[in-house]
Length: 278
Image 1 (cartoon, rainbow, N blue to C red):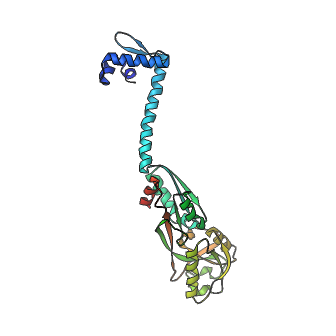
Image 2: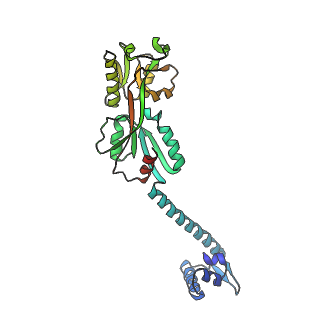
Image 3: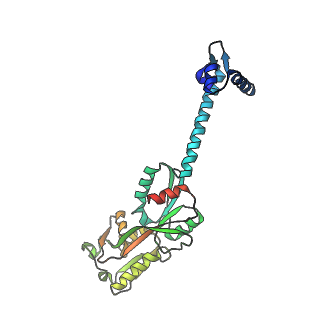
């Protein structure tokens, strides 16, 4: 490489802190091992043969790739490159996930961020099994061996069909919903959300008439859109914007949480970067 760049044995030897004889011997050994002539010598300078030009070009690419490999390894070790898998519930898709994805992508463009929407009751198990690095979910699901941090706190609101008689109200009190058919996430999917809704209904003096139990918040809203019931949903679900669904504030609405969970034994350096950003 140095000889090809200087085209002179004396200058190449000086740059390499060698004398000319060892440099000549090394070049001769290289040509012998390749079985080709790399240079044509003259008293004043060195000319590369066609084989020498090609070998120099390939060698330069190899050394550049080696340098990049070192940088890539350093970036991967520091969490600035690599892969990161994040699972989330539909509610998180309408709250923090878009902001996290944009901010993390801007800060660490070399990290392949894999976002997976997963049914809530599967998220903790997937984190524990190492299928994903972290999850954004409702609290209260099995989380043995996981760390958790609250990342969303928001009130419940009322989702009603646009054709519902109370759809024109500016806000609603929980007592006004007595006797209404409810669409609700099952206890297996979102136990804390379910308990929060039921207990708030009790403060209004009634037990909710749960007509439909589903797994996804999108399904909750789809059934509300059909007019088969009403629902109490986290306020971020207003961003779903179904044409036939209206959302109304709930007076003295209880607050709901979503948590970011991860395994402390996960050594993916990209996860540490994500946790710091979140």
